[in-house]
Amino acid sequence: MKVLVLASLYFPMTGGAETYIRLLAEGLAAQGHKVAVITDGSRLPGEQARETLGGVELIRLSDFASELDREDKVRWRRMQYAVLEEIADRLPWVPDLLHVNSHETLLLGSMIALEYDVPLVASLHEQKPNLLAFGRGRCKLAYSTLPVDAYLAGSAFYHRRAVEFGAPQDRLTLIYHGVEVPDLSPQARERGRRRFGVAEGVPLVVCAARLDPRKGQDDLVPAFARVRQQVPDARLILAGRVADYPYAQRVGALIEEHRLAGAVQVVEDLTDVDMPDVMAAADVVAQPSLEEGLGLAAIEAMSWSRPVVACDVVGLEEIFTHEVDGLLTPAKDPERLSEALLRLLLDPGLAARLGAAARQTVIKRFSQATMVHETLHVYETVRARRTAAV
Image (cartoon, rainbow, N blue to C red; front, side, top):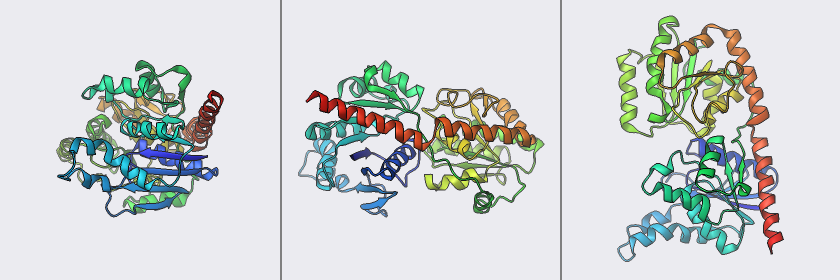
């Protein structure tokens, strides 16, 4: 099968949606399917315009950006169609199926799918598009108007939204996002610790998330200050790019306020291929988010058999069973968060038990292999439905 993927962001950009579509594309390619990903390359001038990564043909577009400044063209029109024109010039082949990964690529993909009369599959990851300008109209367009053959909901959160805005039940499938299940080795831990300058034996808490108010680092920092009162040599790594600069400044101010400058390391320049080093180095992983579509960073930590403390909120509570494969705490409660972190840091037996159970949860419910298998079934179903309708 020839699968064309449209993704606004792709490797080396990092984030839940970017990791999802990369693992899906690479998993499809590994099974012998021909996969091309077309993405925005205008923000990555140092990257190749065309290359093969993980068996996937990656095409980065950039010419469209200069089209917006042409004085001989109507800018509004160029905003809508310059990307389409570049796709037409760079398209490697006519696809058998089109998979889009966001609202804006759904608009583009709808026109391409209609042009070639091929099935269109959508996985939409935006957290709260309905709260943006004309957001309800945007969601109704995406879920009940555009020519989508199948919607893939990566969590119960996304499934509920799709239903709310009119996605037909016979075109909506819940397929949890999956992660690679790594081989566990002492060498991986040693490499991760060495990379971040953390000696073996030093308790390390990791939070892998972009610096954004929704991610809750401003609760984690004061919670970690409480942890340090009982575990004075503990370290914290905040691994993630800045998504909100005023918020990042606030987190930095909290680090200073609690006198944690030597104990907290903020690492911004990481991509998803760096996450194995982050997770392997950790003793405990914290995900204090206020809400998630699906806590992919938490699932990655679980795949490494790392015990996770997460907030009992949408997009996280459906991953864990409290006290079985993780610990859940109320959101916006640094004191309870610190208590959970201390339980794991002071009780290695509990940490090991929860970590081992977490890895089994990933293998059963959140693996890349399961995600690819279930997605292929949807692809084959919509293609067969198209054939039968002819």
